[in-house]
Length: 290
Image 1: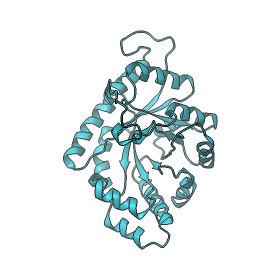
Image 2: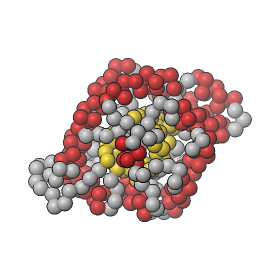
Image 3: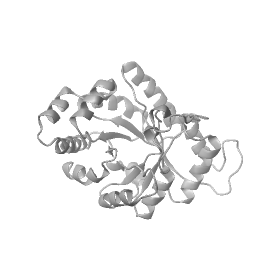
Image 4: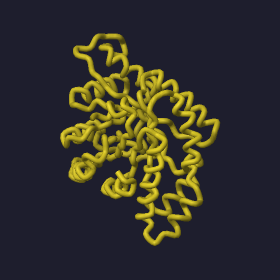
């Protein structure tokens, strides 16, 4: 059953995020993907997230399809104008990548090409509307297409730091759903009680909500998130648990597994984010009982 059909059937879906290489050596990406084939419903391929230049998300998506693994491709407004975006989206359909996420993109100055200039010709809502038009056989200017593509398109819920910014992101998410988003990927979940309150609001948008589960690799990362991202709500209990553990990497995997297991009772899926530790995905899935 495809990712789209599982969503429609209200089944719990498991997604794994995998990054393309900074280069052309695809062996690690392919090997990591093969290890979770049959255990995840689809692999999410970001497009130069964190402002790091990498092989394109479209290239990574095609590689997944070639392995018999369903792919979900990120699409950003930051790096392309409306013509290039539409062209890449049409190419994705032809190449067999029919799941898209219109994603929030990070500030490009935080990446490895700090002199690069962001494009932002259109915004995320406009891009979702454009994808809807393409599926009706028209481009953004109303010209007819020779052949009509089909996509299962979702969006991300943008980062927030306090109740006021969360309400602003809720309003934006509502606009994204009205523009055609069929599912929402949320920021990472570190505190289930906070997430329950957040989820109660987001589910009112009427589309499947898929929270992100982030692998905490070390105590330093946990402390960094807690000190720099107030919207993350990473608790002192989590930090203390990792600090006290003699095997901190394993503790992070256990925490991720427990979070996934808890979310199975609430949300319609999870997206597991490991940021370069994709080889740990099988252990996380085992810890979650998947």
